Amino acid sequence: MAGLTALEGAALVIGGIYMLVMGLLGRPESPQQAEMGGLTLIALGLIPLIAARGLLRRRSWSRGPALITQIIALPVAWTLLRSHGALIPAGIVLAAVVLTALYQLVRPTTIEALGIRRPGTATGTEPGTTPEA
Image 1 (spheres, rainbow, N blue to C red):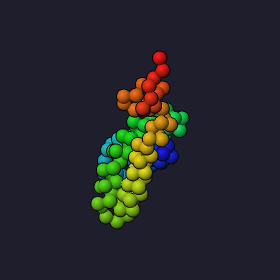
Image 2 (cartoon, helix red, strand yellow):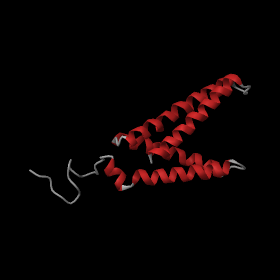
Image 3 (cartoon, rainbow, N blue to C red):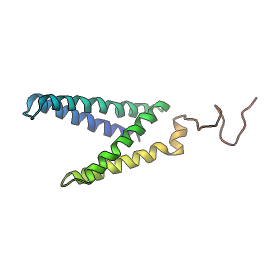
């Protein structure tokens, strides 16, 4: 799960670096737009990379950014799947990665491993038990 999140973050950062370099060295129609797009992708790529590091360290806060990254990637995968040519396989791969990561992030074992308490449970108690006095 952390690996998939890191993979998505790395892809965003690499795409952002490519856009930034092409905006600076290439001949885009709008260099400013290419540069800003590249910087935006790099910034967006840092979010899942930081979340992946938190997931590896079993930090409970990391699940939120990782979930948000997956939810944002779903429409991107859908758009790629509805396009033409080489973008369709990219959409299939992205959809598979997103759905796998989402499944892993919502599994009870993941929630437990990250130390996230379920609503209505006291600290240190399991559902169905009573806290000690």
